[in-house]
Length: 143
Image (cartoon, rainbow, N blue to C red; front, side, top):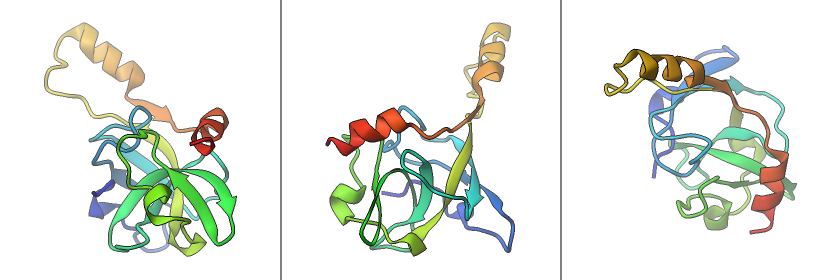
């Protein structure tokens, strides 16, 4: 199940890129249709939301939370435990498959957000930084 659009590929030597989320594996942190600002080559730590190549289908990009370092790479999990498609399915992700860290989430306005109050609410919450969730990583590690 794809998690990012194929337009998310790193272009040239630019350190930042834009990706679009597809799928439910990172709900509630990220939702289908969210746009992400990805910092390619950024330092990764436990709790970071990262973009990586799928270990078994490397033309597919996914977004997951890096939970912990293990021998051979990163253990990654989705924030939505019912969606699957993470290290519980494919094991540790090697470092060379980790592309970058998500820095910002942008939610596009939906067609039903037409009233002035709805537009103001959207404007106040559309763009948010994506921080490391250390408490979430402990919770996810316990699974």
